[in-house]
Length: 130
Image 1: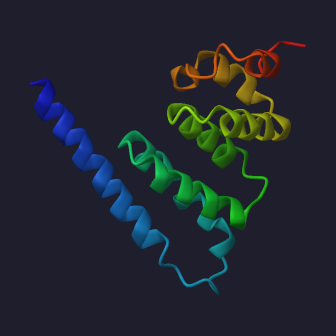
Image 2: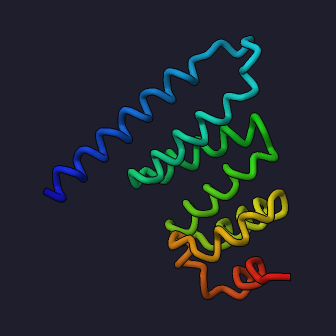
């Protein structure tokens, strides 16, 4: 049934979050500590899909503290702010992501999570083809 599949999906996200929490316990002195932003990104995405938007944003913020040019965290943060209908921040983070990697122009064009900002002139300007 659909409800059972939904429950299974939720369990998978919960397991995924627990796994990322374990990965984040790596000693900061570890040679790979600078890569800690990747599990933070992934944990944030899982939280996002669970509707835990504030926690997702916290993960993206932590990832950005480690790597300020982490375009994926910026894009995910823009998506999350859009779902929260916080348009100004959504547009600002989307703009930052696009400035770092133009692939987000095409992604944003078809990303349903930008529906709340899709009619904004500044969104249309961001995704225009040159």
